[in-house]
Length: 323
Ligand code: AMP
Ligand code: ZN
Ligand code: ZN
Image 1: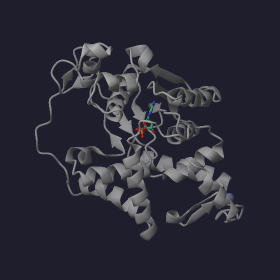
Image 2: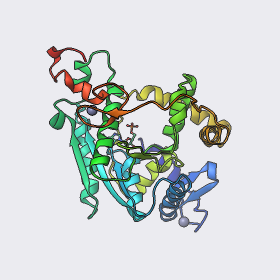
Image 3: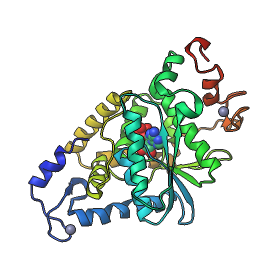
Image 4: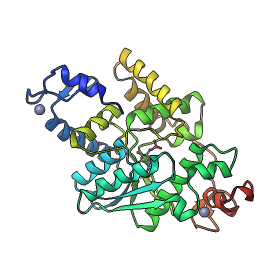
């Protein structure tokens, strides 16, 4: 993220609403400007409220935080540790070139090294499974790197959470991420995604609970939190990022928000309300039957191997054909 908004804002000399000191952030939607100290108190309170409101996890549960090395997930880990949760980290090195994965891992490791008691587990895709995302995408021609990457991350996160005995996996998705995905899902009327997009996905046998504690915070707020806390994070977007579309949706949503304050919350909370209170997107179909993957044991709807294991079943060389 560019820090230009931050610098220009500091020049504006707005006062903290609580102490009158120089504000580091002005949150228009909350009509609240805060100094660094008060902002660092405000953020964890918002996160604690989201955890409680959506019943994400209790004080004694063990949380596995999926840390990419970006601002959101490192801020999340920092906040959960600060709130006193037992939160360990998981970083997946996806083997993306130009130093992107190496830099990301280095940020996650540096964060953990600076906090005694913050345990980080690293899973290196190429080392543990034989190929990183770019190679995998080349081998499985026709599969986009981003969709492969999403599936691989979900699998590894779940595997790590289940084998490590964690109660939940926490990801750093913020409100802007969620609203952009919601816009995409709505434009495509992806009803099955709309049915499942939520701050909490309850666990099932073999599938760990998934939670998004930053769901009420905006990207600008998580970035400011990381900056004020002095967290060193990777600014760059993944070079493979489908990002272009998501960034475009985020831009459009910010324009809507500028015209009409609160649009993002209204859109997102409206989805939750439509589903919980009004029964929208409820499927009357029988629940899909799951069975354990023949190789890894994770629940899958496919007969035989799960999608992740099928990826590797043909070997990891280009010549060994599509799966
Ligand atoms: P993304 O799908 O890249 O927008 O990331 C969403 C969330 O997934 C992040 O906030 C992290 O919690 C998690 N995540 C993304 N990439 C990784 C990674 N390489 N290792 C661990 N967690 C990740
Ligand atoms: Zn203050
Ligand atoms: Zn499997």
